[in-house]
Structure formats: C-alpha cells, structure tokens
Length: 254
Image 1: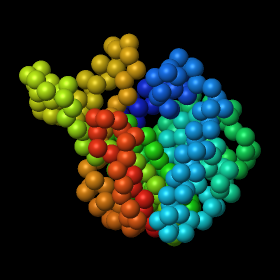
Image 2 (image 1 turned 90 degrees about the horizontal axis):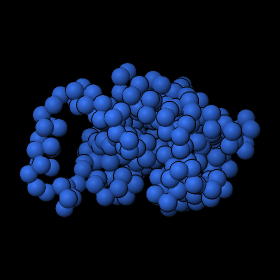
Image 3 (image 1 turned 180 degrees about the horizontal axis):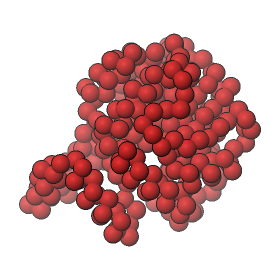
Image 4 (image 1 turned 90 degrees about the vertical axis):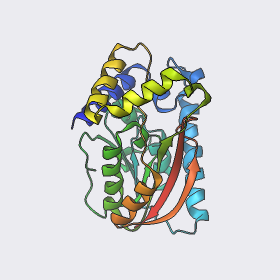
C-alpha cells in the first residue's frame, strides 16, 4: 500500500535521527535531548490516567493482554506491561521497534514487532485492551478507518479499545487571507493520490520535520465502530492533535 510505504519511510528516518522527540515532540527536547527515565515516566503517568478513566466509566477491564498500536520506542508499551499480564507493541518503522526492544524491561511478557500491512497481526478476539494515541492522526483517513475496524476485530468479548483521532481541521487566525484560501482551494481540488505525491515531494525537499496530519469526522468514526461490532462507551474532546484540529478520544467495548 503506497500510503503505508510513505509513512514507513518517514518514520524510519525519524527513528534513526531523533526517536524520542519524534514520539513526544516537546520543542525543548529536540535533538536527542530527552532524558530516557523522564521520557518513560511520562508513559507510566499517561497509562495510569487512561486506566483511571476507563475505571470511572464503569466498564470492567481484564488485565490480560494489551496492544499499543503505533508503539514507537515503547513509551506506553512498557507502562502497559506493568499493568497487564502481557503487552504487545507494533509499529511501521523497524528503527523504532529496534529501539523499543533495547528499552524492554519486561522480558517475554512484552513483545514488539514491525507491521507494514493494513491488518493487525493477531487473530480475532485475541486482546483485552487496544490502545492508540497520536498515531492514527498521521495516516490517511481510509487507512486509519481500516485500522479502527481492526481494533474491534482483535478485541475479545468484553475487550476495550481506547483510541484518539482528529476529526476536522480548525481555521486559525493565521489561515485568513488570499493565499491561505487559494492554497486550501488547490489542495481540495487535487485528487487524493496527487495530493499524497505533492506532500511526499515537499517532505523530501524540506529541511524541517513535517508530520502528516489527517482526520476522520466523528460521525464516521462512531458509525465505523458500531458497524464493526463494538459499542461506544464514551467520546471525549482531546487536545493531542494540536491547535489546528478538533480531536476526540473514543472508548469502545466489544
């Protein structure tokens, strides 16, 4: 799949050059300035907050098997391994997965693998918990939708999926004026395949790190979850995508 190949190339490079910053892009930490202990501590804090939210929703969560989709170097996967019997991390970039394996403190209870197809490498009904944050937003919407359906497929009966994805971009004050309007018009006039090629060429020529951003409208995500065989427990606003997007956290139960 062309879009996955493009994503893989970008994240392979990020995984080689500045992997911790690519996962958690604090401007003050760019240039391999993240302290590893501090970096992984943010993962433990985030997982604690996520599990506390699920608990407040009153949805029973088995602590058997968990998946971190888009695991990067394992920031959240390592924290999941402290809370679940087994934790699995998958990522499109071999450079990220190699780094994650070096950071693994949980032996065989925590595994990492590279996945470069639009299907998760688990049989149906295999997992108790599927987690994905700040990952689907970097994928074209059709690919993100495919993975959301996969989240539901691999959930065991009673399993929970917790994932974040932006919905629609927000027009910011800097987006006003003739040139931004022309640029938006040209962007929407181009076929998706052409937009992808233009974006890829721009990334190749740019000296800056540019993360692709995509969204999926909330109504489409809700319909997709339900048609895939899960029920939505809650949908909550989320700020992970930054100021230019509305974004939501979705919690679904099988």
